[in-house]
Image (tube, rainbow, N blue to C red; front, side, top):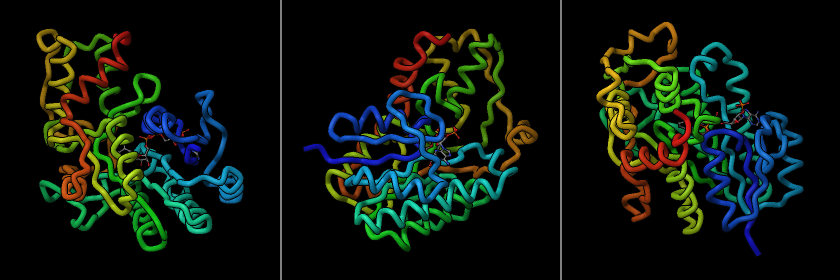
Length: 299
Ligand SMILES: NC(=O)c1ccc[n+]([C@@H]2O[C@H](COP(=O)([O-])OP(=O)(O)OC[C@H]3O[C@@H](n4cnc5c(N)ncnc54)[C@H](OP(=O)(O)O)[C@@H]3O)[C@@H](O)[C@H]2O)c1
């Protein structure tokens, strides 16, 4: 008989990959407030009574708490709602996991660091700077201090979901290309580690299978900059001779992207490497796969 996983907040970028990867070997119950797929059921995970009720009814072997508010500017402007969604709901998840004695997966972020170091491994102390980062780190700490069995996986710059679900950098660039822009202004003072949702889901599966619980950085191999990612997108799409790239610094976008962001979000997958469980591929390889699979008929 297949083991069962209850997933909450699965209607977004990462949820799509989790559904596709885990459905092969597990029986899933995927939920979200945005029921945008026929494999999703409605659950507002801020409704703690309903959350408990639905999970207990499904009686899973694992609880995956995936969803959050991920728009940093929205979070800055909506602090109370952000803490409710990104922190308090995770506390509920911890209580459910403890009560049912099942492992909890919580997704954290490279954004919880202050960006003053070049690289961050699992032993570095987070110093979150904005509302989103604080809300995510508070939840991370609560899981670590209170959950009996947990897996915390930290992602870097997420890539996945395609035109329908990707709310992040790759989609923002692709949208401008589709609109016919002939010059793109890209910051060259932000560094990080792209993280392909499918690699992330597969590496999580490997950890679950081997019962290696705890805290893990989980980003693709190789650190880079926003500018270099854009260069690579244009190269893959064969547009490097027809679209001009202009380097700017973050001040250029300070009105639109006013939330504080670390200059460096470079994650090192130290613990995955130490355990021989690092399945994350080089970011260039996964970017190509992502564009080939999700954007071939977009432009
Ligand atoms: N995106 C990144 O770059 C990134 C990087 C590192 C870590 N992470 C973490 O990875 C996880 C997945 O993020 P993602 O990129 O997949 O984000 P996403 O695409 O925005 O998906 C999150 C999903 O959660 C849903 N949600 C929000 N509030 C909810 C609630 N109260 N009840 C149920 N569902 C709710 C959202 O619905 P709505 O769309 O209607 O709000 C959305 O469908 C998050 O924990 C995030 O913090 C993301």
